Image (cartoon, rainbow, N blue to C red):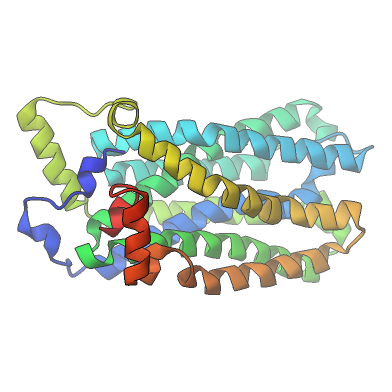
Length: 333
């Protein structure tokens, strides 16, 4: 998205915290948590639905097929970031966030209603793939748009902290999905879970997504975006999907990708494949694997505020940021 929107606006109203800011934080965070919930329950419950949607005679191949579909969602995420980032610059942050949460909820509904392999044959995994493409596009646009929105709504001295709440809310959404898996595993048998009840969390995600959509309709548009839009109109400019990154910020983009790629790989290896690895390869019970994932996500949520120079705010952290690039962490300035 247009990095110019993160600069301090000429309007003095952006320096004030509006009375509805706390509601804005909660609404944005809850919507982001639900999006991560939709994203995460796929990995949590794939141990149950893999043999239902893919050929059931080979459980390992079915799990691999389910993970391959998950990977497709990851592949299309950059495209979602590009499309919804451009839309956020062209039509506003709120519009982009409305579309991302709506698209993610539609994907969850499609997964909840996807027919079994016995009923639809290869049509079942094809429909699952389509649903994951929609969710991948939505997820790719949700985090950068929501994080930019919070950074623009925050007071100058709190931008890094407010923007970092996206990671706390996102992990909370993953935690909610794992918790639902633990509860359903305790209440239902493995046969019931594999037969139909794995669809319950996806239906819940679709319903909660409608609530998040309604809540986001009431959000105010970012004053930074409104100022930038007026500036563009007076200058006769239109936002480009590729020009901001390729023309002016390609070096910073490469730096950021290089900084986060290692941690991202580690996170997804742990959060996506650990449960399946424990159950399918090492023979751990599904309930035990889910409980271990629940505890690890709790630890992650409590330790998130302790890591990252954006939250610490110390002189050493500020020096570290300045040494890397003066524009690398623009939301913290």
